[in-house]
Image 1: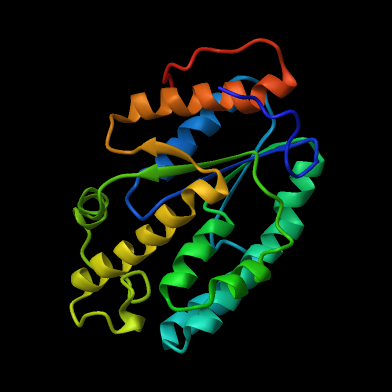
Image 2: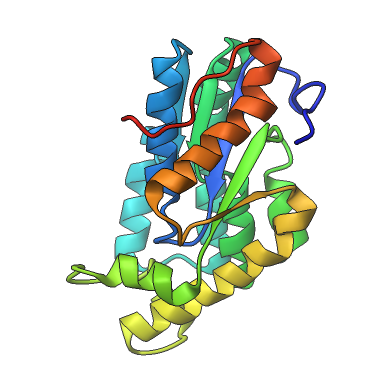
Length: 234
């Protein structure tokens, strides 16, 4: 497995992101990775999509009123990301932290394109963002991911299901169609963006062992000579 000579962003910290459709298991894997890195005594900072305190209230109000066009939907998420990037992600990278991001700019690329926004326009909105050291893409057949999300769920949220696109009057059907469109976008960009694909249909411990091995060989190898076991123990 090749080791990069230096991170793309040039900061002392490391940026590791996970991507994939809803129900791909990426959040679970990132949580386990966070636990493992902290056990190594490394400084870790976690962030997730659409979580800026500054923008979150406005986003909730706009979604509740159902006034978001694809363009305004894209812009409000770009504002959320920009706030988190400037206030949280960048300072922690500069301070030498291992920044773990549950979704990154690629979520915008996939979702906004699925909603009909021009891909070049969306990418331009995020041009300030640093390239990650590692971007994991958790892949699984669409029906597997959908089954995980729909199991035990009483309702799907309006925008989550893509109901604003008029794909179907049935929320489950709309969700299936919308997630399929998003998956197509992820699959298209995977090679060009250098995603590390993880088979998300395998048992959680197997996935995590692979994730830890890749992180150890492509990220931790820059910072320390020793490598720890990839066993899932937290």
